[in-house]
Length: 260
Ligand code: HEC
Image 1 (spheres, rainbow, N blue to C red):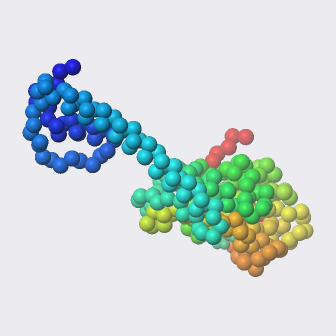
Image 2: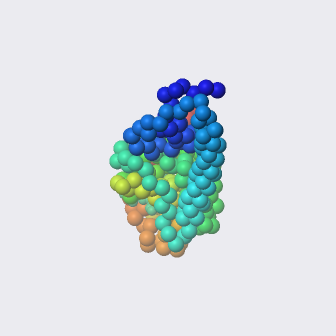
Image 3: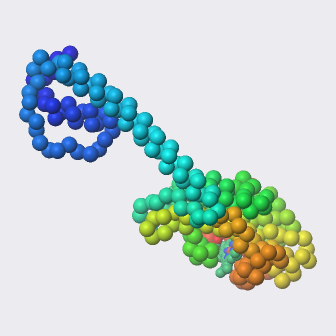
């Protein structure tokens, strides 16, 4: 191994910096010491030191990452605190794919919290069919990004306006998250419509409306606990009309086209 005569200490240090993946620039000042053949021992020593530094740096980075992941998870399932997960840049112009990436990242935590409500649908919904391509912002549900899912009995929902009347047992679930202007990401409530047996609730076309908070607590369920808090759901959905069975469906630009 022979080193070119012009190699400086600065260049050697720089190569160690890039080995360790550090991006902080070194001071732009040449050390100026030239290395001749006699400095090989010094170079060897520096290489050993650099390698040890790289290993230690890697271990430290992994430890730090594991720690922050653990914190995120703890925060998300703590019912006492809203689940803030992480911050994103440029929240104002979230593209559909960006929204989907964020959603996929927080979904486990969202479901872990919703399921504390004890309702089957609060956990099983994520395995149902999703009818939207990417999360879209819903003005009617607090400007949150939402997704629409339906269970097997609600399969006809995929025909949207041609779906007809949903059968008893059909359940539609809409989960949600919010991104603030500063870029903080919060999980939102789970909105659910369940079709009850005929005659159960004539004033709402037999739909039961339920809202589960992001911490898994029940905000309200029509005809049950907190019914007065969720009457507004039924009132707005009635506007969709008899012919649509009180359903509004996914905005056209976000609909998945099914071929079955
Ligand atoms: C101001 C009107 C309005 C209110 C209030 C409202 N929704 Fe909706 N809902 C909509 C609209 C519009 C859609 C379809 C587009 C969208 O997702 O924004 C929808 C879609 C849904 C869907 C998917 C089924 C469908 O209609 O296509 C569910 C489930 C749902 N809402 C549940 C609820 C629940 C539960 C509440 C109350 C906590 C509620 N909504 C309050 C307007 C409303």
